[in-house]
Image (cartoon, rainbow over all chains, first blue to last red; front, top):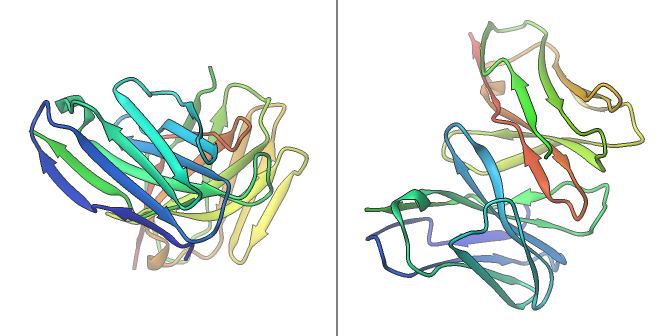
Length: 114
Length: 111
C-alpha cells in the first residue's frame, strides 16, 4: 500500500466550527489532492497541490482552504463548517503531472457536521 | 465540462461469469483513464491505467479498453469470484492528474 495516512479517520462536529483534516505521505510524491465523496455525486476534486506552497482549486473548492508547508503534509481546512460539508474526504497522491502511474488514495476521513 | 457516466449503477451476477462494466466520458481530450475498486468503508485501489495513446491494458483477469474518439471505456472481468464484489469506479485525467470520476458500478458476485 502507498504510504498515505489521513487523520482523523472519523470526526463529528458542530456547524460553524473550524475543522482541519490532515494527509501525510511517505512517498515523497509531488502532487497531492483532496476529494470528497457523496452519494449521487461520486468523488469530486476540492483542491490539489503541485509542490510545497503551490496549490490550486478543484471543482468544489468553495468553503475550503488548503496548505502545504512540507512535501509530506497536505492540510484541508473548513473555516466554518456547514452541514453540506458532511462527507467522506479522501486524500490522494501522484508522482507526476501527466504520468503513467495511477493516483494512490488514503482510507478516507468520515466527517459529520451537525 | 467533462462528465463521466457509468452504466449500470449496480450489477449482480453468479460466480464464474465473465462481465463487462461500462464507462463513458463527454470530452475526448484526456491524458489517461483509470479504473479503481472501492470496498465498503475503504479507500480506492487502482486496478488499471490506460494512457490516451493506448487501446487497452490487462492485469490478471482484468482487461480495460479505451476508445477515446467515442468517449468509451470498458472493464472486462473474466471468471468472476465473490472476492470481486466491490464498487468499480472509472476516472479520466484532465491534466495534472486531476481526476473526474463516474459514480461507480456496484458489483455483487453471488456464490
